[in-house]
Image (cartoon, rainbow, N blue to C red; front, side, top):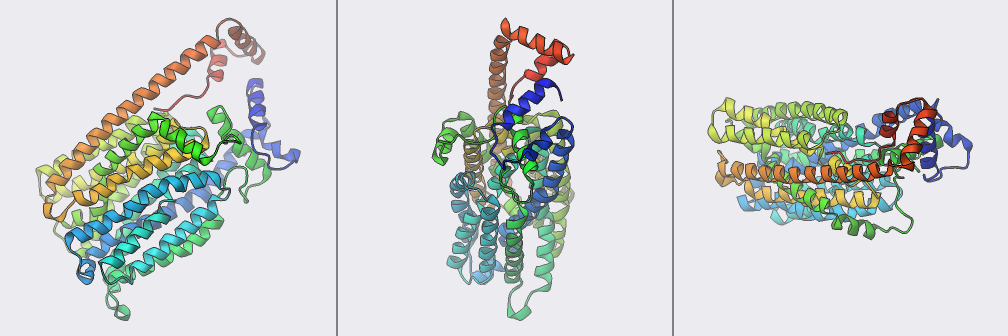
Length: 507
């Protein structure tokens, strides 16, 4: 580590939250221990935070979309639901899920123990999911769907915010993708789990198999929710299963990554964060981009139904629904890995929307089993792009944390209105071709692409503006100081300038 970098680290260390008064706090910030200490910290997080987040996400989406699997085994008939009522129980979840994400992330940026908050929410939605199994009419299942959206709202934007409090910009994309693989895997293996339950539990204790589906999945979620309270970290300054030196290192490396400490000003309230996020035009653009994107990808809530149009029985339909999501999971991780390596964001997100558009075009042109099944593989890859959306938000709206937290809640909450609208786009009366549905979804992805291009242009312009400011600072006496630092460190002037270059947006 150079003299300049050591001084930079010391300045950031002065701004982090004190974890103790022991000089041992700083042992991982020395030149000799820093690199190995940072690798060890990231490995520890990867072993504990990431698997926990992935498993919860698997349970989250299995619980949420269990109703689509139950539909194929008599839920509509047993509860006496009409087509419009079934579409309404899908859509009603987003009435609470979308708006609740904003206050939830405001709370998350304010409290000190996110592990307890998120864990309690996991238990809450597991209980509500299990209660769905006892419903006997439309009103009962509607009530369950309304209330399951409240605790679920805390999870996805909450975990993404938590990841942004631990991982640097160059680490965040691939971790976000691993986390999002939970959703993709849940679509694959959730269907297989549902197939097993629905095939073997019919009539057990006199209950329909679809009721057992909710009981079993809800109970598993509740159990893991209590484990989550112990497994998840809190924030870098107060995580219980890290020592003082690791906690200080966790704060310093995030501060260095952004050029300032990753903490809110003492006088900044959660309402200030909300106002700052709303005033930033980048937040608004991301909100509409996310909404258009999720409307274009809203087939996800009807994936078993789309697979059933291939003409096979229920068990085979569930089995055939799995491979496309396994393929999407692999693409998601590889895409995020390359995004982290390259630092590029827009094309790593939008190019997958274009693959989905190709899938829609194929489905619009043929009803042949092979062509339709191939198009399902293409359609699932769209979520490789969505997996990086909140990562891009965190990169583009990095500080202060209260603003970043609210912005992520706004983008994901407003974005999921696309899923709510999609509940009525994929109407059964347009099946089995669903041509109208696909045209609407295709147009939505075109709009998302245009908004993404706009965001990319804005970030490029802001980076150019920062370049001009830094160039002015490097003239006259500023240049002399850089030349002197380069001479002392034994490096070229160009290398010294590169080291002094401040924060830049990833686009």
